[in-house]
Image 1 (cartoon, rainbow, N blue to C red):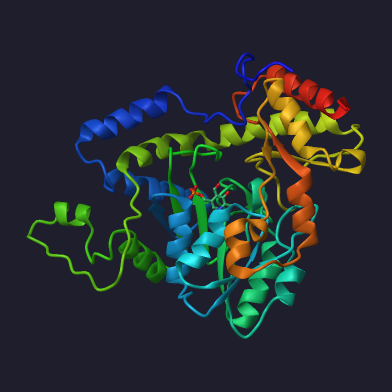
Image 2: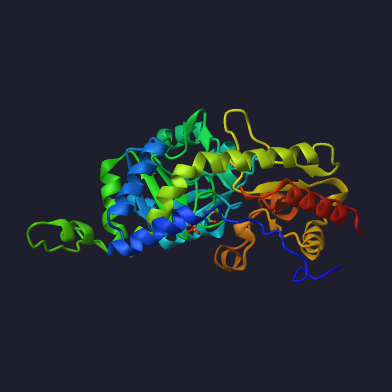
Amino acid sequence: MSSPATATLIPITRPEIGEEEAQAAAEAVRSGWLSQGARVAEFEGALARRLGAAHVVAASNCTAALHLALLCAGVGPGDEVILPSFTFIATANAVLYVGAHPVFVDIDPRTYNVDPAAVAAALTPRTRAIIPVDQIGLAAELDPLLALARQHGLALVEDAAPAIGATYRGRPLGGISPLTCFSFHPRKTLTTGEGGALATDDAALAQRARVLRSHGASVSDFARHQAAAVTLETYEQLGYNYRMTDIQAAIGLVQLRRLDDILARRGRLAARYSDALAEWEGIVPPYAPAHAPHTYQSYCIRLTGSHSAKRDQVMAHMLAAGVATRRGVMAIHEEPYYVARFGSCSLPETEAAARETLLLPLYASMSEAEQDRVLAALRAALDAD
Ligand SMILES: Cc1ncc(COP(=O)(O)O)c(C=O)c1O
């Protein structure tokens, strides 16, 4: 096997970012106002219109947005929060940041999203919130989860980190749940370098999030800068520095204008992968129910049958052939920090998915030739002893 260093590596992703974003970032730099100013406000407004949400609060990243959302929902020490374990570790870490107890539940093995029946079975008198995750760009089964939350008086914080642009029953994510958080990390479909946002229809929650993201200050720097009279802020609660910069927001505004094109190109490439893999024995391509079209933040396949035990070997073979892959998400309840702190629990569907799934390279600018190279490397890796 040749070393990946000698082949031209096909990366797991490439941010779809270019000259227009560079220009916008440069203009933000030249404007002289760098952090959470007019461009952040403009990005929030544009995002709110796109999502169909009344309010968007930008943040430094999605983990910060999740932390803010849980604080705004009043989740705290002694509370239980139900969430999938098959998600990025940040979802659960945010629960720990507010001192609450994560209760991990299993997933639907077809969608890799949390199973609403498992959520219902995990409810206790201490349950305070549910965090569904729109995993890998596919909306979680929101209707039964929203109904559960309503019926039991729970907060619902949707982790839509990987799912900007996704819809559920025809409506964009961000305008459905009481609080929805997005990530703009470079692995995501829309990127601002680092970045995140919280969407809500609740004006009071949005206002609380705005205060908390900027040290708990009653008046923002930008508002004080614009005020005609000297304005002194007060600090009435413990806040954080979770601000987005205007440089990030300037990039985000360009990315938002390009979002539909990026989604369409990724969708076409994903469909091409699925067509090619349809007849491959022991490979399960991504599934998406008709009411929740997939946005393919990543293209996740599952190895089954005689391939099911070879995932790590397949990844190693593909890397040696110059093709980057990643494991398909993770099982948080199996990570050392969580085992040490909470002990072990059994989530069979999560554990199997974490063992058997992998992500293939996907990015809007990917050529068909690159995609064919990925498929050839996968074929060779599966056929290798
Ligand atoms: C499901 C999920 N939640 C939260 C995050 C955290 O996002 P960020 O890196 O913007 O903090 C990610 C990022 O990968 C994610 O995939």
